[in-house]
Length: 310
Image 1 (cartoon, helix red, strand yellow):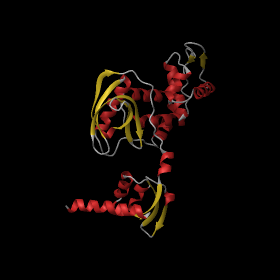
Image 2 (cartoon, helix red, strand yellow):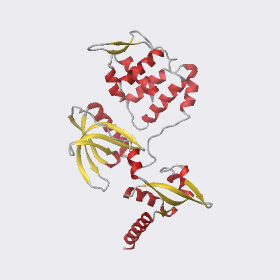
Image 3 (cartoon, helix red, strand yellow):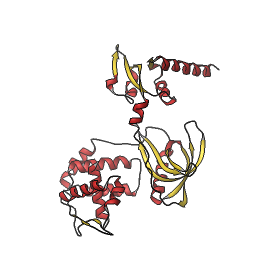
Image 4 (cartoon, one colour):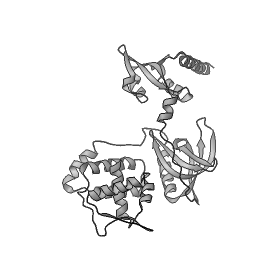
C-alpha cells in the first residue's frame, strides 16, 4: 500500500540523517523512480525533504523540522494501526511495539475516539485456530536470526514425511495463504528454498553468522502457471460444505440442484493434493465428470476400503 510506504519513508527520514534513493528502493522493492515520486508526494504534503547529489548524497528532512500530527488523516492512521496490530498478534517484539507507539503519538486527542472506532471495525488475527504450537516460537527464532544474520539449523520433512537435517541462511519470513514460510539459502541443496514452518522441527539459531548474498526472492504468484494446468471438473455438493468449497472457487461457479445440493464447476489439477481436497468433503461431494477423474476417485476409495478391511 502506497500510504504505508510513504509513512515508512517519513519514519526512516526522521531517523536517519540522509539516505539514498537506491537504498530506499531496495528496502521497499520498488524502482528509484517510484521513490522519487514518493518524495515529491511527501513534499507536496508539507514535509520539506531536500536532496543532495554526488557521493554521499541522498534525501533528508530539513533540520529542526517537526512533523505536524495533523499530517495523517483518520483513514491513514486507522489503516496503519490495523496493519501493525494484526502483525503484532503473531510476531511480537520491541520493534513492533515501538512502531505502534510512534503511530499512536500522531493521533490528536480530538480524533482519538473516531480512529479507535475505525480501527476496531476490522480485526486482523493471523494466529491459527489450532495446529502446530511451535509456529509462534519459531517465528521469534527466525526473526532474531534475520536481524542478526545468524545461521539456522533444523530438520525438515518433505510432503512424504522424509526428514533431512538442514543448515540455512535466513532471508525472509513469508505469510502465504495463512501459512508461514522461511525463505533461505539451504547449504544442503546449495540453493534458495522456501521452507514451510509447520514442517520444521528442532529449529535452533546458531552462533555462526553469515554475509548476506544477493537475495533471490521467492516466486509466490502462480496464477498464470495454475491457469495453464487447471481444468474444470463438475462436482455435486451438499450445501453443508458450500462454505469450504468457496475457498477454492467463486459463487458464480455454483448452480442449484434441488433444495440441498449444488452443481459446481471446480478448478482441478490431477495430483494427490487436489484429489485429497475432494476427499476432504467426504460423502457430501460427488465428482460427476469427467469420467476418468470419477474413475480414479473410485479406485482410490477402493484402496482405502481395502486398507480398513484388512
